[in-house]
Length: 351
Image 1 (cartoon, helix red, strand yellow):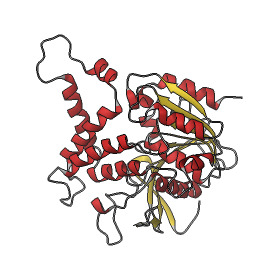
Image 2 (tube, rainbow, N blue to C red):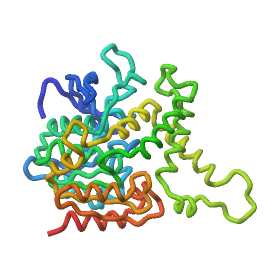
Image 3 (cartoon, rainbow, N blue to C red):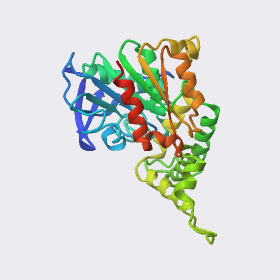
Image 4 (cartoon, rainbow, N blue to C red):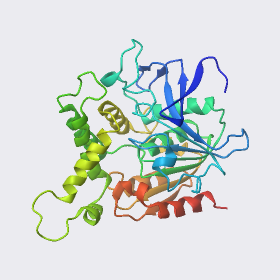
């Protein structure tokens, strides 16, 4: 891991590391990111040629501490644990959590803010491949991602088809849908409509961000899920409904930990996802994947409906399809741990 042009330092917490390449990163859109930085976590000990590497790709507003946000799947006593595997999770470029983003400096020494370049899931995969090389990882036993994380994972499996032994794609797609793009644009409109957006501070448009997250929550859940958890008891309520306070709470919760500029960057990255771009077709691109592949859908997910996972399964050679039954829509991949564990365990431990 030695190189005069790269360095690692800790930030945020004692387990977060920063990979920094002092060379520039050129995006798919031919824009330059000054001195690429990637925040990441590792768990367990890496022994080249012996360790089974599990690499997790996080979703839209996630961070690199996968033990924290996906504890049902990753952890000391979980399916993917540091006693059996060397685990890596890297923060995507564009995020609020340490990688190059709107909050980092451009070549002029100014904070990027809304001048941060458009990035794509393909860019995210390429950036993480740089980190993979830095860590001297020559093969990945299992690459797993859901939602935007799944978009990154499928791109990586196409870019480096011999790198990944097992590929797990959860609640994701080969191309982002017009429906998903419409939801993301409505969220961005909420941010653009905040009069503080563009005022020159990373803390701009906090209210707009909270509204954006409130809109997003509707697409992450389902009619049944809201009915089960947010319905008022009795028949007398005429205002201040549980569902109303839930939306406000979720919006503020994200605005307190994220920034509006990164939210716009990452939602646009999701919109840009199309594995067929610059290739013969979407189907041909998916046919390049050589990994043993498991695709998992959620029956109540209308943001990434089952039909999108069926398409992946039908166009990736010998892929298997698993289905989670849930009332919680797209967020089912974070909620339905028992079902997810069963499906993944059977796949990982298959003869």
